[in-house]
Image (cartoon, rainbow, N blue to C red; front, top):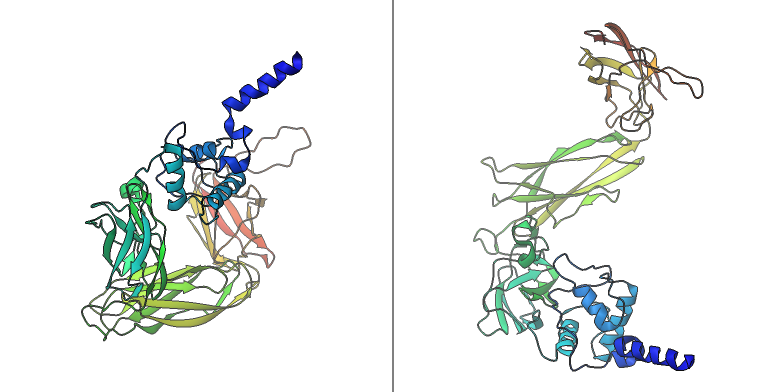
Length: 442
């Protein structure tokens, strides 16, 4: 009797949860309809989560027969790959336009409005400023945005038949952003289009299409002077030749544009730190004197000789480069630290004071106030750092620190009005003494 009850129980569960009772291969077969028609209006893949305004990943997981956690993990990817293979779709494990269209058809028993699909772009190459036509399906009558490498290339484009879009290859594109969900919150920066292979996709209110490749063969004509645009010219600058570890250096690059246009500056520091073109690192606009300049600051974490490359690019994509070298040493070549002055040199406890001088170490500086080590607010210890070797900032304490026996409660006797010494000690030695004056008793 008990065996019959148990068997009946498993049979009931199988009826309630058919995704768990059938084989995986059967689950991947087309279904005439599903318990509800989910709305999918975006692409997603491994690591994605449900958005605040929907549960699309949970709906996909429910359809694939796994627990709807709302997180696209390794199990979801594996199940999606199996589904794609069963439908003749490339088994990438990524939920894109073709997979989305197939699943919605199976879930709802009919075709729904989905993200557009691109079949081709013609021509498949051209210069900046030339036109190309995208062929496909699902384009909107008026609200189509062409994306190049994921960045927006301009305003909305109309499609007269929902199957063709004609657009112009722009000089630059914006940041990757969904215009239908982000609105004015999209980041405001530009990225220049350079010769090479780029991806083209289309974004509508129903989502973003698959991407196809387009080859940009050359820059646009600048300022109406087709074929006569000249690259920018670098006219030197100010470049430090020696620095210490963690010391901030300043570089200034001077350049000019023969057409007197805006220039974009970028730099590769040679230590894996860079701000690479075509992402804008610095922009100088035309001036009456035509000469333009851009200033950069950087510090190096390790000693060595670094080759720094600066690139200057005009609005047509033509560029010029210059290189310089800097020697970074691990120690300041001076002797013991030397103090010049305090700013301010008087005040009350709690005042922030900057020490000016030379010979300060990148780290390991101890500031002695009236012979007592100051505690750093940033580290909680007595180790102060100097990024340039010439300044240190600390806060005047309220009283001297007293060493107390274990389990004893000790008070800090407040400093009284008067003059107190300030000294710096580090691995280079101990400095001279300067005086800080309290203006009143505490």
